[in-house]
Length: 165
Length: 165
DNA sequence: CTTGGAATGTCAACAAGGCTGACTTATTCT
DNA sequence: AGAATAAGTCAGCCTTGTTGACATTCCAAG
Image (cartoon, rainbow over all chains, first blue to last red):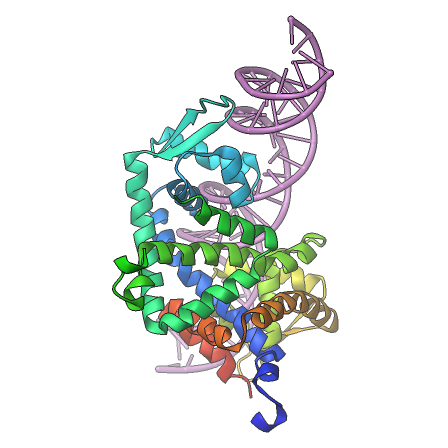
């Protein structure tokens, strides 16, 4: 079968190869979310709560609007999740000082504890996968993922890191 | 900051690196599903229909039970999706010959047309990402994804290819 | 100082797509 | 004959997404 292809650059772009990549994404994403999902299932929370906790932990003091942009859901959808997290004392919402219309979101101690628990589980799998694949594979992994994002998402993905001081 | 790390093997396993990998997965998966989602939104179908069509296209004549195993959902959930696809004439369900309890699923011409349309959109993005990242990155990408799967999922992932004759 | 618009929050209603549990119908295997 | 398997169905529940309408608060421009 190899002689049918003129070179690697052609070979790796066959529909079959692309299809395998698609399926790999599908199955891997299942693994990616499996561990946090298991933890969340034992509480009254879901994946949406995890996402909110993650990005609040990542950018403490972020506004609701900013979070809305990152998560890409409607404010009604986010609000439902956020409300339960605030009611349950995992997230604190403080009115902005310069612009008092804004609400700045931070994790409480309890919220940070849950976030760490979820994050630890997810990172453990990521770490194992990185270890198994090796540093060069990780670089390639990240390159392909980044190339797969919508340009707007890629911008957000980078913006999060740039906001880290 | 580089001098704080003793080497690459330590560097790429920092929590920060892992966190970036997690976010890359999150944002990339959004891109991954965006194009088919747009097509599906214009019809009365969702992502679940896409998944069913994909794996029926991949393994024509597969049984309901087999599909259930690959997708990892309950039969009630799959049945809802499958029923509409059969009613709409996109999927054909035929009684098995050797075991008449089984139903073998195949795409009709109409179903194959839709599947190709969805698949083309998803592959186009995949192809662009692969091209942008290069062959070596793709190898790494696939290695990390595979390492991220649950062992059972990895088995299924491979089983699909092995069933290709 | 008024007013337009932005940021936020909230209510209601709906849909997709997961889930559990209970049960039926065929069919096959032991 | 009876147990096990494959498939399908009904009913009800949950999470998480959607629209649309609307209230509140506040900044900033006129």
